[in-house]
Length: 520
Image (cartoon, rainbow, N blue to C red):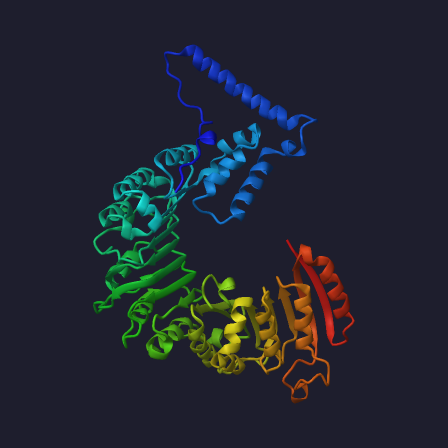
């Protein structure tokens, strides 16, 4: 935990005592001089090109560079490093509130004061995550004082993330959560280690009309309390309730919660192994648009939680109209957490302008989800249903080791479009080559390969379209006969090598068209 360095921070203009008129005049003159010199530096024909950039463009570059790195406690150290390059950069950085909008828990009192000052009244993002290292260095009184300071500007909160709450007095957290937050758009309440009881508080005093994104991890209360809290936020667009110990004794006659704008729902409770699972009861009391995506993660796996499997299918498909289910004509599956924000399987079912979306967190739960999809697709449907499968490198080894997963994939409409992403390890592209020898990819017509070295792309295509008599079982109809379209995306450093690979592939009579793109 580091205090923001003083050199750059001391560049702010402190108040001048009224008794010193001469000093104040000198300071004002110095400030005007600095401004003029900065403008002259930009406009001077002899200045380096970087100093001739418009301020707006320079600020955009700063923001891009700072966000290329993972945002975190070192963010303001990097900001200060940029400000030390030259006078103009220092001036632009110190007078750009856009760069001072995030508050992390590791800021010391002086650093926090500077950030709140330089953000100039703009909305701020509070990332209050306490690490064990921070607890060793700072007392509980320090963290509570920091919370009080943040509470004094609750009207400026845009994002509020509270994590590691077991290290702070529960009453202090409750006090923060009851402050009005008229501009708050996103709340993350993560207390997975020690459950926080929120049953006796009114979140933000009922004054958070702009809250659209709510993520709650590790809360402890009864189901009715959860539902009552959600009733206060009908404007929610994204809701995630995870790893929570919630008793599901819902009184008879409890009305469903209407969330008419909800787009994504992620939910799991601690006791989903019980016959009357909390997830099922929760879903029964949530009214959301038909296009709302559902992502579930049972703790004990669906092999022991069939009620959850039924609840998952009922909420996603049971609410759909007859016309939507009969009109299904496309399926997109995505395997790998790299693409799915922590979920191993995500899917979209298409029916005209309607889309049914969902997913599960772990690979062992994927076969059950595919069974639910398969049941829906067994209904009378158009004969032109197509399946798109997207696989990231990390999912390849899991796929080839799980026979149940491959078996359920084979029961779905044939995969006609295949996208492979980030196959960097030898085991990954070797695994894909093995999959091409089976029936799973035998109907693929369009293949896209992204973020993969050109030599590996060549190996993949050769495995997909093996030469006759090369020791394959193509005669048995288990491999592709041809590809209508091949699309390759590579990083700029691989472009020359990729051009040579594409030249060879374009001469292959079994490939209809080959396109090459450079990933920026």
